[in-house]
Amino acid sequence: MWTWMAIGSALLLGVYDVAKKKALGHNSPLWVLLGATVLSTLIMAPFFTSGAPEDHLRLVLKAALVSSSWITGMLGLKYLPITTVSTIKGARPMVIIVFSMILFGERLGPWQWAGVLLILAALMLLARSSRKEGIDVRNDRGILYMVISVLTGAASALYDKHILMGLDAVFVQCWSNLYISVVMALCLLVKWLWGRAHDSQESERFRWDWTLVLIAALITVSDFLYFHALQQEGAMISIISMLRRCSIAVTFIIGAILFKESRIREKAGEMLMILAGAAMLLM
Image 1 (cartoon, rainbow, N blue to C red):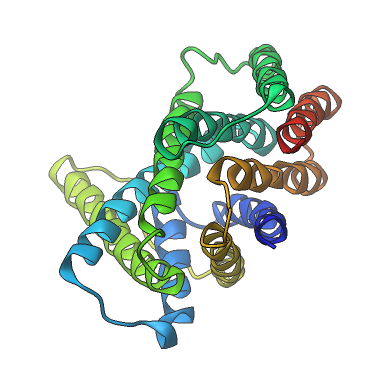
Image 2: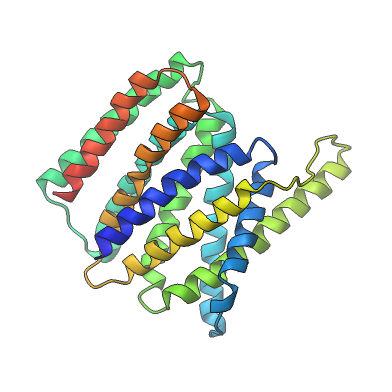
């Protein structure tokens, strides 16, 4: 059952990534994240319950990890083609796999390790493809943002597995959304104060966009399936994370159609390699 929950979460996550890219045409990354998270918190408002102070402290830490991953991921999405971003995200499950073995005793067989190597090869090909688009993987700030996003996102996923051993999934989702909203609001406040201190002319006005409602609905349902999958008997964070990364197929197809990005055929080969690696990890 938990595998099907992870697959459902992945499908919604793929559409969510495309919706985020579209929303960036009207607002800055921080405004998009804050708007979507606040709306997601309102959607979950009827399900809020109280908890111990130490449980809330755990969720504050989770909010910091998620916010770091989201902010850097959105910045990467702003500076890079969505098809490149979706392929880079394929690296996150590999980080999770390694640490899930260390922290939770999960084990992979020969086919799974073959899948890891195949995904690594795909990412190396992506680096070559990106340079052809004028993107220097070693220096481009969009790539740097995505690396930070991958690492903090992996840490957040592993932390999810840890805290869900003792906390209810709905409690985690509700309060995490609220604390993430607070972190995003503080980031916007700091940026606004910094702009005033340095006489920056950069506009940070919020412009209402109905895409934010779609983003909030997609991430709410996707996270609901994800958190409940993690709490199922025998659920493995390494496999769930890899299944969720299969959202790149949805993101790639829709992104290629909507945004008419370049070198689609070459990137399609890299995406298929990542999906083949994911299939090996499930064998």
